[in-house]
Length: 371
Image (tube, rainbow, N blue to C red; front, top):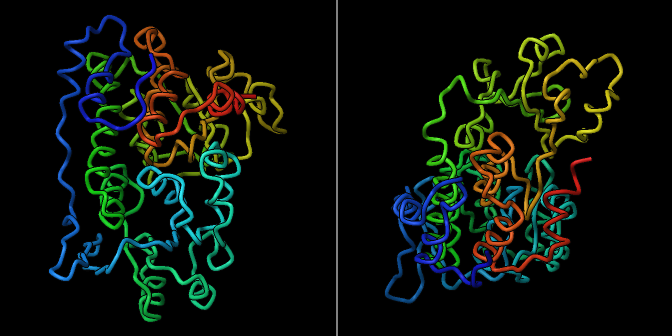
């Protein structure tokens, strides 16, 4: 089913929650009637002069005389988030080099060709800023994670407007959407996107409400080689009904050996997009010194490369509902027999990015990275 382009909340509420086998429309609509969560920030407040202020995650008020036209983004996923609010513009004059790496691997390069013009030599992949080079870009605003306090201090000391955003968690993504939307003077758009994220995830969790813990598949994500997710990706693992055997380890990620993998013997293995590994490396036992053939996930051909849409799906982001749906369909094929991921992706991009994907682009997202 295809939906009209443009983001209308009533329409979004009407079409979600239709993926479960056996769910009827009235149940779906009722389950989708969620409330937009209150942001932890204040909405953009207009002043008598026509300027406005935005409060970032530090509680700092940043005043703007006009909507910024020259934007620099330090956080890697920020260009895709900005695109969801503003669409394809020439506004992003600088971004993290890793944003361009993801851009070149994703359909964002087709959606947002202007981003190719963004400068990257003012910022390192680990988000260290060269203020001298940044000043040459004459940015009206810089978006950066609040954890980069030294970089924030450097930029603010140079007289630049810095909006700090929160990192890592899905709730942070929703808060960041609302803050960026406030900077762009598009608060209603930010609220719409937050509601759609919540509804998309609720579509899956409502279908899995009756699945017992013992019936959940054991799932491991390889972030890079034998570095596995512990808590880093709870935002999609938990709502998709995955049982992560690494959850009792410490930290967000943990390095494990093959002996540990054998003990876990996962039903499904996902390979993250920060890794050069591909499913065939495990399925065809290409890694010297490791025998993957005895692992259930490999025996049953349940090894998958996580997709990239406008950005990587495994980190918390705008496309987390797609990650949750994609994983849930793999993990519970009977429950989600009625869910067509190709249609889900098309609908999502139309509503969130206001961009109509071709069949080839959908295939690029879902199929081309599974070999």
